[in-house]
Amino acid sequence: MINRQKDTCPKGDFFMPKTIRSKILFTTAIVTAALTTLTVSVCFSLFQAFLRQNQLQSAEYSLQVFSGNVSSAMENILSFHQWCCSNMDIARYLEAFQDQDRMPSISSADSGLRITALNAYDRLKEEYHNTYAQEYLTRVIISPGRGRCYLQISDTAAAGTAGDIDRLCQEEFFTDALESDQYQWAGLMEDPLVPAGSSLILPVIRPIQSPYGSKMVGWSYLSVSQNIFLDFLRTFPLESDSWLYIHLGSHSYRLRDNRLQEIRSPEYRILSNIKGHAFNEKTMANRIETGDRQRRTMITCPLGQEGWSVSLILSEKAYQAQSHTYLALLAGIALTVCLIGAALYILLNRIINRPVQKILDKITAISQGDFSREPSIEWQDELGRIGCGINRMSENVVTLMEKKVEDEKQKKDLEYQILQSQINPHFLYNTLNSIKWMATIQNATGIAEMTTALARLMKNVSKGTSAHITLEEELALVKDYFLIQKYRYGGNITLECQVKEPALYQCLIHRFTLQPIIENAMFHGIEPKGCAGKVLIQAEILSPEASERLLQISVTDNGVGMSEETIEKVLKGDLSSKADFFRHVGISNVHQRIQYDFGEEYGIRIKSSPGEYTTMTITLPCRFFHEDPQKTDLQKT
Image 1 (spheres, rainbow, N blue to C red):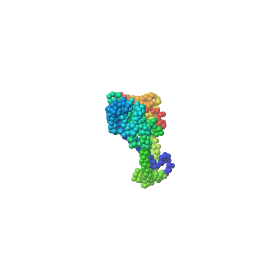
Image 2 (image 1 turned 90 degrees about the vertical axis):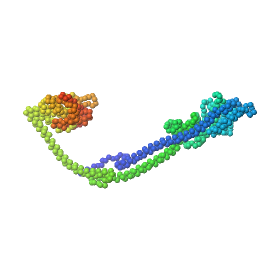
Image 3 (image 1 turned 135 degrees about the vertical axis):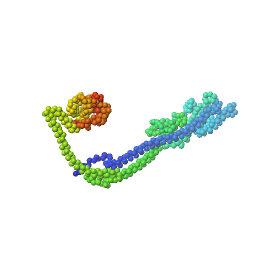
Image 4 (image 1 turned 90 degrees about the horizontal axis):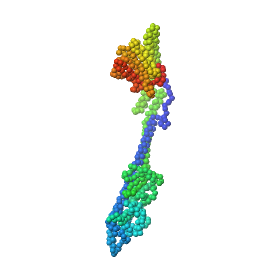
C-alpha cells in the first residue's frame, strides 16, 4: 500500500519566485538590469570626465589663440616703444631741447633746432607707420624732461596742450613708471589728454637715457587702446553664462557687453587646483566658487607680459546640454536592452514553461501512486532527459517495492539464522568451563589456567565491537595470550608490565595493539635465540604540562634483534606473522591504524641491536575512557 504524505516541500522566499523556470527568468532579468545599469553608469561617468576634459582643453585652446594674438600685438608695440627710447635722432632731439620752452622760429639764431626736431619727428612718424600694431596706438609722445617742447603722433582730433602734458606728468602712475626699472602697468583708464567719455587706454611710460651716459634726457608715452583686447575677443566663443577676466598687474577686468569693466573685489573664490587637465604647463585650471555659491571650473592662461593673464569661467549650460543629450542616448540604450530582456523573458517562458509543467504533472501523478510510463515528457533536450529519468525512476520504484517485500522475507530468515549461530560460542565457552573444572578436580592447574585464559581470550575476540579499549583491557588480553604461550614454551619466558601511574589504565588504545607486538617478540625475537626470554611493557605520559599529552608504550624483548632492513619491512608489512590465530593482525596494521586515526606524527618506532634487544615504542594521544565520545560502546563491551 502506498502512503500518501502531506506535501512538505519548502516554500520560496518572499521576494523570489517559487518555480525554477521563474527563478531562471527572474535572475536573467535582474542580471541584465544590473549589467545595463553598471554599463550605463560607467559610460556616463567616463563621458562626464571626457566631456569636462574636452571642454577645458577647448577653452584652453581658445584662450591660447587669444593670448597669442594679444601677445604678438603687444610685443610689436613694446618693440616700437624700445625703438623710441634708443633711436639716435630722437636722443639728439631730446638733448637739444632740454632747455627750450617753445619751438625756435625760422629767423632765430636757433633755427637749426627746427631741423633736428623735424628729422626726429619724420623718423618717429616713419617708424610709427611701419609698426604692425599701430592701429592700437592712439597716441605717441616723446618729450624732454621739462615737457614743454614734445613730439606727438595721435589718431584723435584733440592733440593735447602743454597744460595737459603737465597734468599727465603729475599723475602717480607716471612717476612710478619713470622710477621703475621695468614696465609698470597702471591698468586701463580714460585717456587723460582727451575729454571724458573716451574709450579706455593702457598707458605705457618709460624714461629715455642719453646715448652718452645714464642721464635721463626725456620720456616716452604710449597710449594703447583697449581694442587690443576687444578686437580679438569679438571672435572668442563665449557662452552666455561664461565669465572672462583680463588681469593686468593688480587690476582685473571682466568682459560685459563687449566692454571691459574693472572689478574692484573678487567675484569668485578658488577652491582647488585641477592638475593634469591642461595641455600647456603654464595654463592653470581651478575649481572655484562664485558669489552665488555655484561651483565652476576656471582656466587661466598668461598673456605674454609679466603679470598679465586671461581667465575663463567655463559654461555650465553647454556642459549640461551635452550631458542631457548623452543621458537621452543612454536612456534609449537602456530602454532597448529592457525591451530585448522582456522579449527574451517571454520567449524563455514559452520554451521552458510547457515542458516543466508536464514534468510537474508527472511528478504529481507519481506522488499519488501512478507509476506508469509517460512518453510525452521525453523530448530531445535536457528537459527530455529529465523526463526519461523520471520515467525510469517510476519504473524502478515499482521494482524496488517488489524487492523490498522480498528483502523483508529474507531478513526474517537471516534473523533466525543469527539466533541459531549464537548457540555455538556459548556452547564452546561452556565446554571450556567444563574442561577447566575437570582439570581443577584432577589437580591439573596448568590445564585449568590455560583453559581459562583461552576462554577469556576467545570471548574478547568474538564479542568485542569497539575500535578502542582501555589499556587495562588490552593488557588483560595480552596476559591471557602470554599465559597460553608460556605453557607452550615451558615457562622459559617472562612478561613484566610497568605502568607509572594508575590513571594510565583508563587510557584508550586501539584493540589488538600490543598482542601483535608481543607475538613478534616471542616468535621472531626470543624463540630463534633458544634461551630464556623476557618481555617488558612500559607505559608513561609524555609532556604532562603541555596541552597535548602523549601516551607512550614501549615493548622490549631480549631476543635476536633486527636489522634496519628488517625494521623497514616490518613497518611496511612485508613480513607476515607465523601465528595462525592472529595472522591478519600485524605490526604494520597497528602502525597504519594509529596514523590513520591520529596523523603521521604518531605510530610505532622500532629500535634494535642485533643479538641483544628490540624495543618497539608506540606513541599516540593520551585520551581517557571518560573523555571518549564512544565510551558507551566500551561499556557495552
